[in-house]
Amino acid sequence: MIESLLVANRGEIARRVIRTAKRLGIRAIAVYSEADADLPFVTEADEAVLIGPPNPAQSYRNVEAILAAAKSTGAQAIHPGYGFLSENAEFARTVEASGLIWVGPGADAISAMGDKINARNLMAAAGVPVAPGTTDPAADLAAAVAAAAEIGYPVMVKAAAGGGGMGMGVAVDEAALRTEYDKVRAFAERMFGDGSVLIERYFPRVRHVEVQILGLADGRVVALGERECSVQRRNQKLVEESPSPAVSPELRARLLAAAVRAGEAVDYRNAGTVECLLDPTSGDFFFLEMNTRLQVEHPVTEYVYGIDLVEEQLRVASGLAPTFDPDALTPSGHAIEMRINAEDPKRFLPGPGVIRTWVEPTGEGVRVDSGYTGGNTVTPFYDSLLAKLIVTGDTRDEVLERAQEAVAAFQIEGPKNNVPFFAELLGNEEFRSGAYDTGIVSRMR
Image (cartoon, rainbow, N blue to C red):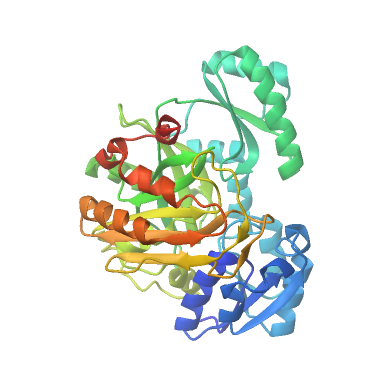
C-alpha cells in the first residue's frame, strides 16, 4: 500500500481523502493557498504546504508548485480529488514521469474521454448508446446549422472539451443556434483553450443517471450501481440519490453493462463515472460523458455498496485487489446527497462571507462531509460547495423523512446558503414521488 499521499485539492474532498488515508496509516499531505490557510483540511493533514496565492492558476492548478510540495515532503503518490487538475491528462503524465504514483485513471483514458466528440465516437464503437449528434466538431456556424437541420431541433450546443455542466447551450431553432454557437465557442476557447463545438439532440424532459465504475488493478472493470442526478440548476447537480427511483432491474442491468463496456473500451483503471441521459417514457438511455475521476456524489454509492471508494482508489493505484468480491456485488438500502452551497436558495447566486454559526446535523443515517466550520471565511475564489449532507436508510421513504429532520437541524449563519432550498425540495410532491426530471428546479422557481 502507498505510504505517503499528497492531496492536490482543497475543501471537503481534501478532507475526505485525508480521512481515509489516515485510517489506513498513510501519511497525508495537504497543499493549500493563502485563502485556505484556516480551513480544517489543512490542520487535519499530517503535513501541509503553502503553494501560492488564492488564484487557482497560481496554487491548485500550479503543477510546478504541487510537484515541488510532493518532492519536499517525500510524498509517494498524488490524489487529485475532483476539479482543478483531476482530469488533466498532462498533469497525470507529469506526475508519473516524476516517479510518483497517480491515484486515478491513466493519462490516455483521461485524454480519450476529455474530448466529448472523441468520447462519443469511442462509445458508439463500443456498443454504448449515444444520442444523435455530430461525429466531428462543427467547424463553423454553417456546419452547425447543417448538422442541426439533420439532427432536428431542439439541439444541445456543447463544448467538446467541456465538463461539469459548463460550456453548453440549448437552441430551439436556427436563430437561437446562431447565438448559442458563438456563445459556447467563445466560452470554450476562454475556459478550456479549445473552441471545438459539437451538436447533439436535446431532450427537454429527461433524467440524468450515471453509473459508478471502478477499473481494478487486475484489468477488470466493475460497475457499482447507478446514481440519479436530475435535480440540477444551470446543468449542475444539487442532489444525487442511489438507487435511482426511475431505474428498473432490467434497465439497471443494461445501464451497468453499457458502463462496463465504456470502461473496457479505454482500458480504464481506478474510479470513474459514466453519465447518461435517460428518457423516462421509453426507457432508452444515451451516453453523455465519462468523468475520469472521483465524483462529488461518491458517498451515496459508498453507502449502498458498503465500501470506501477512496480506499479502493488507493488499492488500485497500489496494485492491490479490492476489499470486496467483484463477483458478489450486492447493493442494499438507499442514500441521498444534498450539496450545501454558499449561494442564495432562490436564484442560486454565490454568497461568500464569514461563517458565524455552523451546526451540523447528527443522528442515525446522517453523514456530513464538510469543507468548512464556524469562523472560516468562504471566499469568492473557488466553487461554492460548503458541505455534502448525506442521508441513508433502508428505504427511500425512510431517507426522505430523515433528510427533512437533518436539513431542519443544519444551521449556517453568515454566507448565503441553499439549505432552505432543500427544505422546499424535500416537501415537493414531484420529488417525493420519485417521478422527477432535470426540469424540476425550474418548475419550482
